[in-house]
Image (cartoon, rainbow, N blue to C red):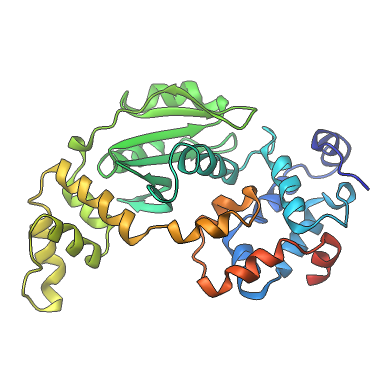
Length: 310
């Protein structure tokens, strides 16, 4: 049994049933909970259930392994009418992190807090670039506040959005914010380039996105030693020191420090052994080194066996 093009699947299945449930179930296959189950147990009852709920099974060969099945599921999810936030994250991972850069020189952070907001993706290389995703189904209600928060922390801020949002976004965000779209060929197309401006970031806002150990590392790089104060006073003392840095220096030290403390170079081998559709999910989930081989092996299991995990 061969896989059927997913345009055919859409017309023959989703139109007859609840269209919204199909992409939702498929998107959840790429969630952290499924990744953790595969890594920790070598199987995922959640994935087995989601495959059944997705409606994809009549169009998938049960002899396909999990890696091939995930690629088919991802191809379905890439269709414009199904696009989910994960597809955009996967595009940034493939086209920016692993396309322009690599894990030896750059790191990717997901759901990274900045002020009252959480940036969907942050890529750290020579600078810090934030990416806020506004898929075809998302609302733009919170966008202005999110952008305000990101501009205080990241030198480069980008909105990657569905084509239906582009005109509105171009009108409502500052000219220094980049606006990107995802093409039908799964490439990232710039509608407007972002301006890289570390001088407009705010040291006090940058301070809040790092933990105290990272703050100490950043300050030592500037020749500033950790203050000798009780632990109860350490936060305030470090904040006073960090806020004395210029915006450019604070941003530079944040990038250097986070690239060091949150490096993903150890995952290079793991990524080369899992399907590309899972690269973003893998990088976004904290996995133990001892679970890597189990995670890799799970993708070689036939779909017929995967379904028995439920």
